[in-house]
Length: 109
Image (cartoon, rainbow, N blue to C red; front, side):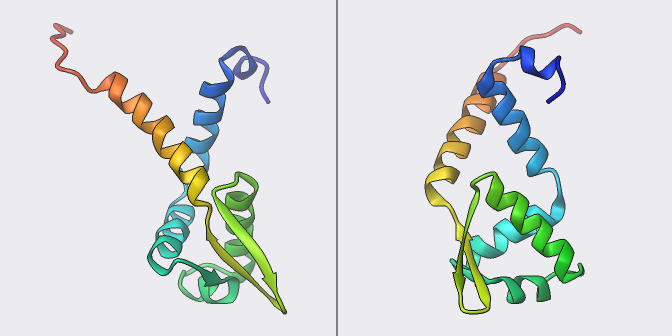
């Protein structure tokens, strides 16, 4: 972690990391797919996107490392699903940020 980043509140650091993680369209597409299907097998996920299986696996791993998705080994496959409890926390964090910024502000600049 960059030294200047460490100077900020841990909650702000976490929110920034989540925003960075969600900044890739492939990860958002994976999340949307898992939300729509409730669970998925990694091979099926790779077939849904114009990316190599290795690239999709890398995105899945990043989402899993952040706790946004869960993965369970089932034979030769890994079944992935959203981590609903983590998503509730993430939603609350972003709602907190957005609620601070969405006001009727009269600014003359």
